[in-house]
Amino acid sequence: MDLQKVREIFFPEAHKAMTAAKENGNLFAYYTTAEVAHQIIENKEIWMRSTTTMNDYMEINYGLNLLRHAYEIDSAGKRLRDAIDKCHSGLADEVWGEVKAWAPSFWADTFITCLSAHNPEKDSLGKLSMWRAYGGKTGVALVVSGEPMSLETRELGAYSSPVSYFTQEQFCRSMEQVAINIETHSTELAKEKREAIHELLFIVFHFAVLCTKHPGFREESEWRIVTSSRMQQVNSPLKLETAIVRGVPQPVYKLPLKNEESRGIVGLSIPELLKRVIIGPCEFSHVTYRALWHALRNAGVAEPEKLIIQSDIPLRHS
Image (cartoon, rainbow, N blue to C red; front, side, top):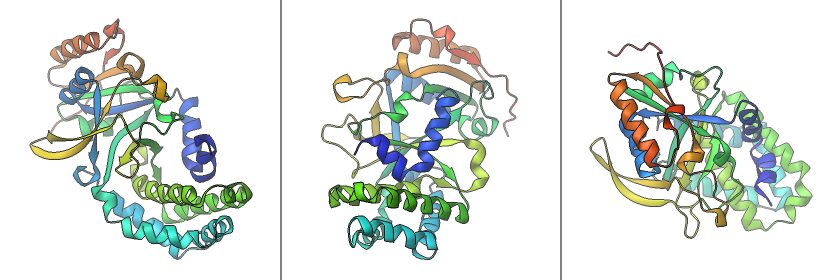
């Protein structure tokens, strides 16, 4: 089953969000410090960190609680279980048992990097809330093309998803829609190998936990790129290494920003990927500009000055 069909059936919310992102320019912003932005450009790689070290790791509890209620208590869960078992008898309990067994490791064995959907007409200066949360006193936003977010390949070993800002009721209705989709395609899905559907459903539940946040965070318009040891492919370009982040040694997956056309991995090289560099509220904007200009030039960007803009959004630092 191709990835497009998988998204339509099992990830309807993500499929709708991807369509909307393309209509809005298909751009995403990575908010960070000037130091990290420079490292990303200079080293041509971006890091995916363990959810245990992220400042919002407790959000996983929120998604997990919504999932448990929807699947075990709400009528949406019963409808989903019945739909799954219509394709492969007994598969629903089999997958759910594994999800419950793996739930504690969702924290330790999941690595993510986070971006924010970027509308160039509305967010030319960047989002104030994101500068406050991630920029510090030297904020930079790397605005990137969304094309790699929807790569039709499993070779990368990492997958992108929008974050859903759901209440419990909204989560249940989303689960019910997945159940309806499975019912509609039950004949087709029954012909797929049981093991393949098992693994796919596990990923559905995994992403439901990782990519659901409280509606209070909706303004962030967050997307996440996710990987884990379970998602890794043979010879994946992702490399698990130990890095020092703000003085803390920790495992990170390093994603090279380069193309591998033979494997369908395209659009990741710096000149293709970067569409804008926004220097946000910054104590030393002039020297930051010069450093980023040189890093971009060394990375193969012909005219860096056309990418870099200065945000004059006001931000008071405490």
